[in-house]
Length: 232
View 1 (cartoon, rainbow, N blue to C red):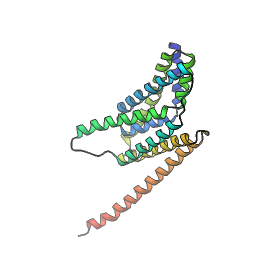
View 2: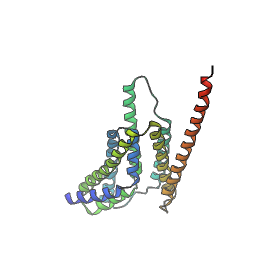
View 3: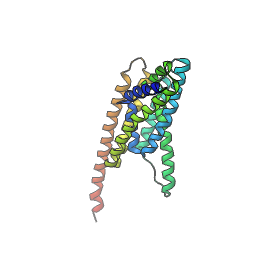
View 4: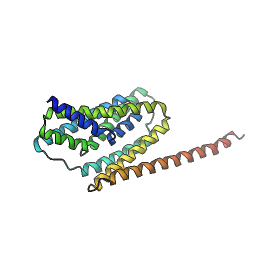
């Protein structure tokens, strides 16, 4: 068991370095508290890797991921629109904080669950479970992914303390749109692995440009209205 745990931890940890899951974790950490993001990742990863171990141990086959990628892409586009809209403020701040924490946990959990189904880490876990102890693979792969994503959460939390709120909101929304396009590209064109990353990069670039244009126009409107308000 211990050899399977160590092997699966090392494989998944290395596989997660630079993966879109790390970027997702950093993006969520820009918007929400680190413990909410980490809890959502842990819950989703535990569930996905349990499914992976069961598939690898009992069936030894992979789950088709085309439909999952399409659903996940649509979900990320919704997350981007939700982030761009922002959270509404209520009079009761305590109840608002509780609702935001719950909705953030559900968003992180569902996002990572959909993103990891059919991802290379899931396929690696399935492969490891075919020839190694299933419990060791499950624990090791889960801890390995959470550890890798925790590094991204730290980066996101640090950046969130030093960036303006609008910059965080626009940046997070742009990244979500990029992730959504990436997953849709993978789901709609599974025969080639290049469409997803290219679509994600293009969507990210277009989102950033569009938000910069909107922000510049809003500044111009504010500057034009300021002298008018100062007139007697």
